[in-house]
Image (cartoon, rainbow, N blue to C red; front, side):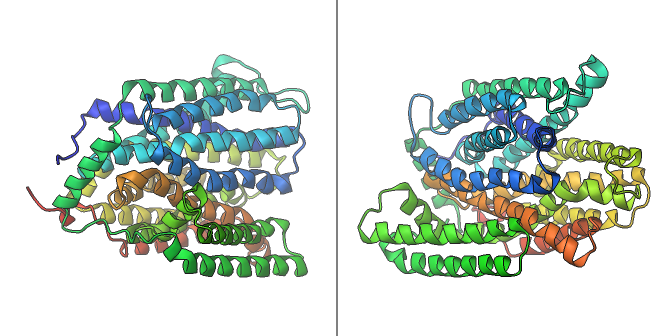
Length: 510
C-alpha cells in the first residue's frame, strides 16, 4: 500500500482547466438563453417553465453519468471519455443554439446543451477526488472555483465587448438573434471544446488498481473510517417501498392541491417530480425482487440509500445554499430596479440602466470569487474546512440581507464582494469535505447524486418563490433576496452538523 502522490501547481492547473470551458458555456446560457427565448416569441411569464427542463434533465442525467463513469476504464481513462463526449455535444449545442428557427427548437437545444454540460461537469468533480490526496483537495476545488470565476466574467461580458469594442451589431430584425449573441455562442463553443481538450491531453488518470491501493492506505491511516453501510439491494427493499410510497403519496397530494386551488402550473413540476421518484423506487423494488440487481437503476438507488452520513449532512447545507443562489439569479434584476431605481417598467430607461448595473454586479462577484479562490485553502489550513465554509456562508447571508437596506447603486458593490467570497466557498469546500467520505469506486455516482441538492432547490426556487412573492409580499422581489439571506444563515448553522471525516484532525500523523 502507498499513499496518493501530491501534484504540483501546474498539474492541478491542467486537470482543472477544462472548467474554464464548462463555465464559459454555463455563463453564456444563463445570460442569453432567456433573451433568445423572448426573441423567438417566448412569453415572459413562461420563462421559468422553459428553463425548468434543464435542471430536471440534470437531475436525471448526472447520477447516471456518474455511475457509468465509475465503471469505465479504457485507453482514454475513466473520467476523460465523458469529458470528451460532453464537450463535443455541448460545443455543437452552443454553435446551433443562436440559430434555432423557433422557440421550441431553442427549448430543445437548452435541454441538449444543459445535459451535455452535465455529462462533462460531474466527472470533473469526481476527477479531483480521484487524483488528489486529502490535503490537496481543497486546493483542487479552489482551482476549479478560479476557472469558474474567470469563465463567468469573460462569457458574461462577451456580447457587450463585441458590441462596444469590436463594433458587431447588437440588434437584429424582429424574431432574429443579434449577431453579438451569435458570435458569443460561436466563441463559447470553441472555448468549451478547446479547454476540455487541454485537460484531456495534459493529464493522466490512475488505474482502478492504483485507486484501490491508495484507498487502502487512506483507510489504514485514518482514525475515522469511511463508513458506508453497504446494505445490498435485497436488504433495502423495505426502504425502497417506504421511500417510494412517501414520495408517491405527497406527490399526488401536492398535484391535487395545485389543481383544486388553481395555483400556478409551475407547481405541478414539484408534484410530478415526487411521483416520478416514487414510481422509480417501486420499479427498483420490482427489479430487486426479480433478482435483477445488476442494472443502473437498482445500483443508483442502492447507493443513494447507502449514502454516507457526511453526504447527508452536507445535503442540508447545499440545499439552503443553492436555494439562496437561485433566488439571487432569478430576482436580483427586478429587486434592484424596483427597490433602488424605483421602476418596474421594463421599457423605461431607468429599468434598463438598473438591469445593466445588475450585469456589472454579477461580473464583480464572479471576478472577486476568482481572486479569493486561493485564499480559501490558506484559511482552511489555519482553521478547518468546516469553519471556512461556515464563515463564508455567514458573510453571504449578511450580504443578501444588506441589499434591502441599501439605497444607492454603488453601495451594492459591497454585498456583491461578500457574495463573491461565499460563491468561491460554495464551489469548493462542500466538495473537498465530501470526497473524503466517499469510496473511490463510487466517486462519480455520489457526485451525481450530490447534484440533487443543487437541482432540487433550483426547481423549488423557480416554482415557489414567484408564488410566495405574489401571495404574501405584493410582488416585491426584494423579499426574495431577504429569503435568500435567511436561507444562507440556516446553511451556515447547518455546517456545524457536518462530520468532516477526512479533515487533518481526523487523520493520524506519520
